[in-house]
Length: 136
Image (cartoon, rainbow, N blue to C red; front, side, top):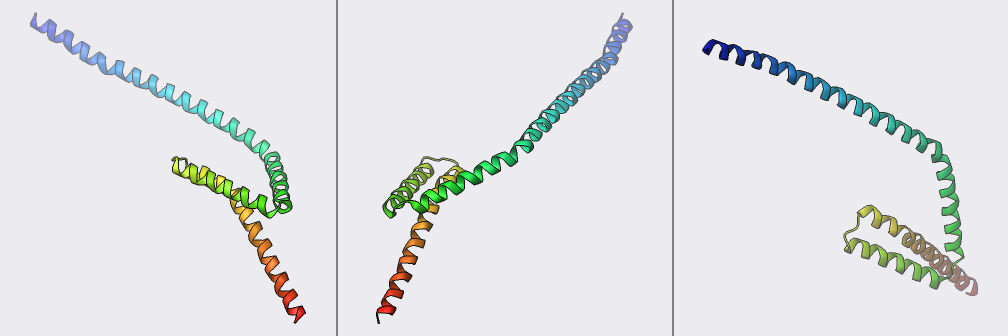
């Protein structure tokens, strides 16, 4: 009887690796299939983005140009208020723990308004200096 038990246990141990190999092969095939599906989905998404990128870029350029025209037409008080609001929003985002990139995006309008204000002040300074030199 002892030999039969050994024989049976030997058969069981010999079959076990074959079962495990089959499971590993099935798992590898499933992983390969999933990787193929992910690659195809990513490829499809990338093609959609590539198709729409020129339209998005064109629309963005138009919107930025319109925003800059409105900033240049705005009064100094409006620009100062807008810059202060954008700076406050940025500080609030940073204090609240928002992502740094989001905070930088909120800082863009403040920068544009601040630069416009500085350009106006520099132009007023040169105009008043020219007027003073002409009066002399």
